[in-house]
Image 1 (cartoon, rainbow over the protein chains, first blue to last red):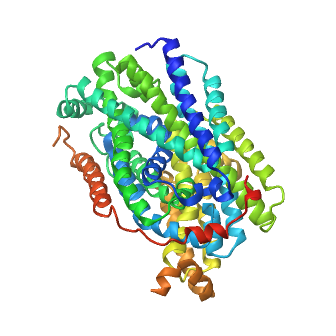
Image 2 (image 1 turned 180 degrees about the horizontal axis):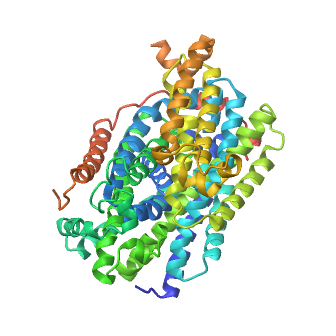
Image 3 (image 1 turned 45 degrees about the horizontal axis):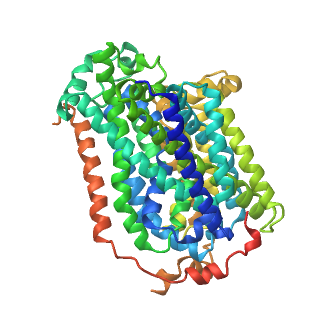
Length: 532
Length: 54
């Protein structure tokens, strides 16, 4: 439903003024490197939980994965379940507490630095920083796409202009305010997202006649699945795809496992554990984080699937058809046509918030990964050198790369690209990160080997086997004359299922075959546990 | 269940709620646990100096 542009303009303006005020507060509180990098390690638990949640959940989850649920159905709820159990509970209670302690003891201010110092390897820190700097723009690019698509649809402005406006606003407060500004604005944005998503689910169920009626109507649409999707194993939007079918593999291996597990090794999320004072803050954050994620992904995936009922009742078409085949447009189309005008405004702020909170952390992480981890610690061996300028330039360059990708990437890309980035992080970082926290026998050589094997196995699988990326990339075709090196089911199995186990095995074998890390260093890393 | 025939879906639907409730219970039970180490200040003191801010 249409909303008057002046009203919308004023609301957006007020919102941006509040954001800038918070950014300025963050700037004022930033006095030392630790403030800029890890917010002085004394962030409030509510801010931590909502900031973590708002960073975790971006337009990618709401627009991209909500749209994927519009196409593939409610099976994506398994991802929502994983998001809560793995992304919140395991992340905070198991990984978070150890990360916080070790980060403090080793005086680490970024995720690559934590790994580098734990394994006493500048190479690990530098390589991880470079990996983040190179591949995170892909993830930032699609978050931009998600935000810009909604701004484009709602404000009726040019998509290219929408991308630019969004980028400039976020860049401004990241560069000035550091992580304190990022987390303050995140907390406001997260609260706004919570309200927006709550309205969305309530309106949707009311519109469709209640919870049971909505689900029954969706189940009744099983026969409407288009031929092309049915051939891939799609059995309806209220059913899981046929076991072992290509769509099942995409849903389970790429979306549910790739993103569900990959979240544990996300640099921009792990760094947040180092921002709180004690474990109490992490315990309390679980209370806020669980329901927050339920309200984000649980709602987005349910509403995405249910949009089929709405569109079929009103337009006689399923969601993918209404969106012209671009799943990234399903959620914007649904919200714009089904929801009351005032809600569209609220939701636009929600999505702006979701995009900005994730982008701000991504820009912050990319900048510090290149400036601090790669340049200062790896190239300059810890000397300050031109770190300040390198960080600023690298923030600018990675932002530029993200914007270019936002223009260049094809439609229906958001969920896929998110999964690629999460999968790569899982394969490259997760075995080494888990070992750093929980396995004292893991050695520097084991960590380096697992980092390299995870990274390159993942990239190889993407480039040469996984058909969804390998075919459009065309590298395999050019080098070997075959679209993919393997055939059959392998071409739909996500890299995470191959590269991560390979990296884990490498980490274990190489660690056991090499000299353990000196006890003195381990004592420094695990002080409390060893003393006890 | 809930108008959904496929148990693989309604189980996931219910698990989402149960896991979120689990998080609430955990957070509430552990509300005051984990108040520990005051080593923040010592580490901060030995941390990087002001001129290194970027």
